[in-house]
Image 1: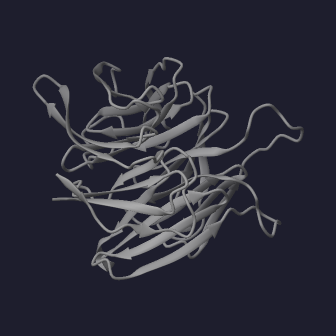
Image 2: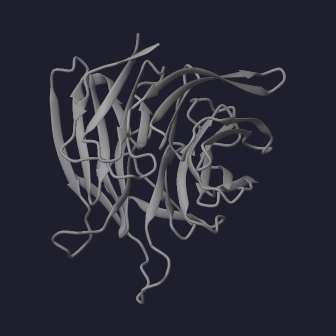
Length: 336
């Protein structure tokens, strides 16, 4: 169903972080941007669709009044809003927002770091655009910061702080089907596996809390009113977002899941884990009974590799890309 294409070389290898790959298609320019985090650097690669041209850029972790920051980056993710695309980088010191090509930093938000050292690490992790003008970023305290982003310029403001989680945020996702009919349009996940389901707006509204089972939910997606959650147990669970009803539970991987992704137009789901497997699943929703079914379609094994990022390269799931710990390349697969 899928076959391996030519890999994209990176300047540095990928760190062992959840969801350590982000992809942005720039259709008018026939380009795709990829970002992968290595320690305190974001590796960016821009590739032309014909595969002939590559350009590389590296973004350093930044903090005000410091020439070079050693602060570790936890995640880099593209946020596509209707009016603009931004690259958001979260680290131990704060949150940086760049133009999508990484050329200009438009915003910096410092995290509150305690004066005295504490037992708890401070960092930001979990990034998602939601609705027309918001970007949400999770923090190690369990808070979710909501930024209001104007259609242009750098007048980005912190508009709200959602304080529902008690453990560090792991991942955040918004409704990706493009449909406005679903009440819930944001889901947040934490280290204890707890999920919070939200409706965005002037004030974000908590619609539901799905309790965790003391096992980290490392990656989460929201599609057609269904929460897709990947766990440290190697399981994938499908919940109805607003009611919390469990539709399906799959023992998908032998080890910790690091990344989930969905191709919203085709209902293909990608899961990747420490067990070196990337699996492709198909989701189907029966509207009459409101039931969701999941079927296994395809496997790829990246031998001896702890996979830490996997993303579809397009909304139909025609191609996907994979990163692995200590691997200095992005491996690509395309439908046969």
